[in-house]
Image (cartoon, one colour):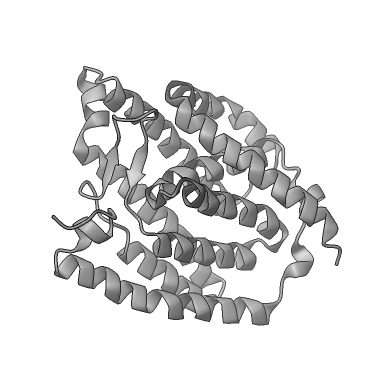
Length: 273
């Protein structure tokens, strides 16, 4: 197994994805219209060999919400008026993004079960349970240089999501594990670099959307980052168990914060009044 091609291609791809996040955070209008235009690449998806219900659902369940994130940012930041704009900037619409994240994890969790990756599937279920609920812990900012979709996840939750998702891809698509790990690491690194864990979902949205679009239109990843030979069933089993063991105490901590009304400070990382 040769590692050196991945040692070159993965860091390059990660840096490219970090640039993608920065670009689409900064250019919120261009972001909305760019992702809307990506729907026109639909014929290329068929030519590129996108097959199976999971792949089609995955692509559409990421691209469409990414479009709506863009237009919601426009609606809130520019205080747009009109029936549709009012819906997009409503606090209640934040439940849509919460639901999409929930369903995104749930669909992969179901797939994990079909693959026999039961411990990791259990970790996925608990990730769904511990998503900070909307609209209290979600918002679109109107201050600062950028208007951002903010979800007040914690650094441990971000890490657990990254590890769970990486384990899922390791089981479901070993060939694409290296490239998928790259997008997960980019999303994990970005909020760490910015020292803002609440940017994780935004980073995850743009890295995943960019990756799925590339795979759907021109899938070069098997040629430059094929990681099929990395697969080991024992590693998969142990990894899933570790993810489950790590998330159980986090679930108790999460519920304790909510029960004792500490979530406002612990999730948002604010000092108590």
